[in-house]
Amino acid sequence: MIAAAAAAGHIRFEDLGLHPDVFSIGFFTLRWYSLAYIAGIVIGWWYLLKLLDQPGAPMARRHADDLVFYATLGIILGGRVGYVLFYAPDMILHPLRIFRLWDGGMSFHGGVIGTSLAIILFARKNGLNWLRIHDYVACVVPFGLFFGRLANFVNGELWGKPANLPWAIVFDRTVPTGVPEPARHPSQLYEAGLEGIALFTLLWFFFWRTNARYQPGKLTGLFLLGYGLARFTVEFFREPDSQFAGTIFATTIHMGQVLCLPMIAGGLYLIATAPRRRERVEPIAGGTSVA
Image (cartoon, rainbow, N blue to C red):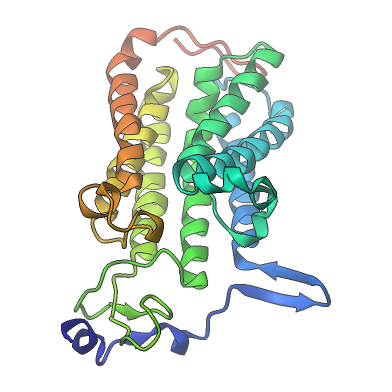
């Protein structure tokens, strides 16, 4: 009854006029979620070229196109495999469902692992410093996070816990049929702000206003720590995944928080040890050496 009362006077999601599909033509449907991936990759690629124009870049602009290809595969494969392992292991018993990407289900933590492995393979193939490439890629990831969380909001998914706040929103189909819908935290927007805008601003400052890019691993560490803390915090306002109902991952600590713990620890380690990795940086193409 309290939840139902809390919904009175709040914005209803259905009144926002949002829909998961941009348009449909015959059998083809373009979804906002797909556009979010495309926007994140394209804008990230553009910004990466801006970063590579600065002195001491770990690779040349000609490497960027290949890197984007490797990273995209890492995002898609790692994100999907991570979702299956961390959130839906039952899919292993129905392997064809794993390939139904259009049904949704991607894990950011799995995407990080997949992208990291892809970067390592790319760096080895081209004789480049894989950790410094991670630093540059870390600076562009917030674009994808921002657009991805906005797409989650447009899809009306991954909503937050019930809340009686002025900006709470009444989402559709969050409770069993017949039960009044409560107003909820728009946790997707919280994540877009923290994981997208705030994290980008942090990395922008350290890249452009400090010598962090000359300390291999520091920017990567800042990304891991920043994302880990942001996601861990927002999970307190986010409804736990339905498949974990009644388990420790719903009552005590969310799966997303568990997966953030190694990111936070890894980020702290990389930041603390970055100064000792400081070395004379020779540019891959053009420019001058940076001591």
